[in-house]
Image (cartoon, protein in one colour):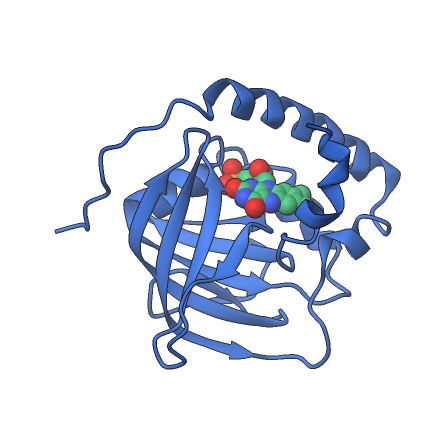
Length: 193
Ligand SMILES: Cc1cc2nc3c(=O)[nH]c(=O)nc-3n(C[C@H](O)[C@H](O)[C@H](O)COP(=O)(O)O)c2cc1C
């Protein structure tokens, strides 16, 4: 198969950029994600699916805490891609300088963003290198007009140094994913008691 022939389709499946926040054992954290989709056709029972990679600190926080919030970015927030998506909460308190409040799920909500969805996990599927979380949206609001920020636009605006850091991080993540993506556990997720 020639993978370049499906690249235009695959690239269009990524969502707008979101800052995925979580709270677990007294720590607030945030990461960037674009692997997000709507997962309910019932307007008053909204759900989302979010894929989080196991190498991320946020992955363990969401898996243990069973909650997260999706804070979609505005077009003038490309700086948050580096602050949240190129460093880990294992090494840094990424939200210390930001204005947040706890959502109903306990996850931090960013005051300044395109809009947010506050979510509680209802199921999780192991993908080997990542976990696919299905979650109920229990709160949220659109805070800005127009379009949110998309990676395909944002990447052209990033400083060269950030792009290089992203490429390096990405190639190491791809190698880890390639090694682990077939190591799937078929034990089903259990809701926390
Ligand atoms: C543009 C962009 C998109 C990303 N998309 C995802 C994603 O969909 N899922 C994911 O788990 N990580 C994604 N990441 C990677 C995490 O944001 C990154 O590894 C982060 O440093 C993890 O932080 P943490 O260790 O504090 O959780 C993305 C990063 C960038 C820059």
